[in-house]
Length: 96
Image 1 (tube, rainbow, N blue to C red):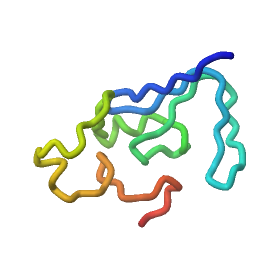
Image 2: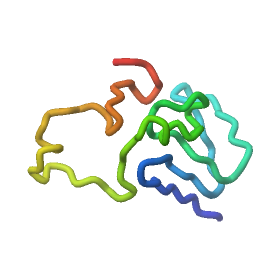
Image 3: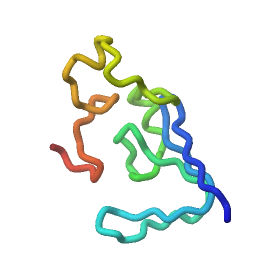
């Protein structure tokens, strides 16, 4: 069986490689007609959940590696619960 690999690109999308099934929160399949897709992380794409490159226009910032949590630095102790882009929408795209 082929393995699925998900790679977070620095300041960009999540790249998914390999056979996968993508569905919305109600369990309906979202057609992805290829074995490699880029999923939006910035929340600004006009074709969500897929990336359209908008992260470049909005200067989205996020690391490729795991972010340190609770390390005592200013960013982790600020109490800010928004996403790295400042977007406070839920994963479904609705504002909270």
